[in-house]
Length: 427
Image (cartoon, rainbow, N blue to C red; front, side, top):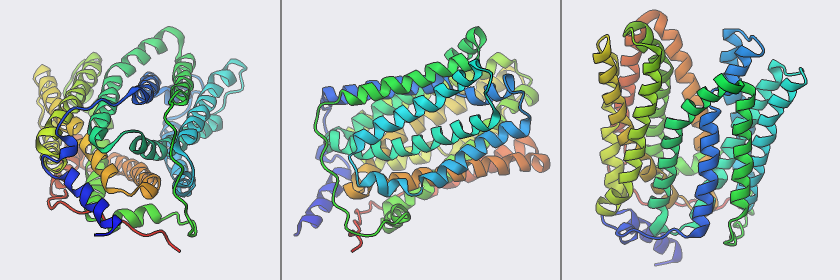
């Protein structure tokens, strides 16, 4: 058996039920703690600054509804175009400097908004540029961080590491917007954005403190290929199935999410405070799911985790439009959304670990870039279609459509455990 076959077989054993790489809790080390601190600070800052740019557009610049909608759409699409060559660029470099550079870029872009507002020169085009830079930097950071984490943490600790990141994400999504809302009321949206900006500077400092030397990137002798990430995904059966699963689930979920506010306030006649409580409490379900994921992975293995929780997260979206009016509807929505996020919180670390295990090191950044670009195009498209369909089907009708599509994702899972299919570098 040659080296490539040995590596593939080793990865397959790690992905099997009860594989030795996941049968016990491991210590992730001080360098991982530094990385985790950096991620926690930036995630909390992003949670606090969540929605700050649209708020500034409305409150400071008196932007129209169309302009606010275009701010999000332009940021997503332009960032996706800018990110096309990023995967290959990042693949050929050490990942830690890229992560630090993107954090510094996000700090500079965000802090320019309150500075411009203080001098009375803030404009709508500047907000669009900031949104594009922020979104493109996020794609680049995500692409670099996957390969960096794979080099920093051994196979036996990756499920635990991804679980910790997932817990932080849901915890900050639960508490961050509430803190941000309070800050907006006290000091305004522009100064609240400073908190988000500074969090990226602190993240860069935390990453800079990591001491473990980063391995040199693999040599790439072939031509640059912006489509290499997608080619690699579709050449691997397990990755390709999960790629379509993520779009079939994430797209409809983003289509339903903005409609829930209107549905709760107008159709169910709930008080405005109920939406904040609904978001905060249900996100704790994601924390719980991520917390139990490592123990379940050690017990049952990655493949079963993907199947079980990939199925369990799918049907809850169909229950959302069935909610009755009043407080009973609030409880109904809270239970359904919390159950969905428990399953999603357990699925996501398993999914991230699986993708990390089956992707060759010298394709990691390109795979993550392609994945992020696709999601950032598909999800806004679903949101736009959902907005158009409400005029024809109504809120409940669109939510049923979204729930039915999300349910299809349960059938698009790696039901057969797939061996990695590494591609050679083009020569």
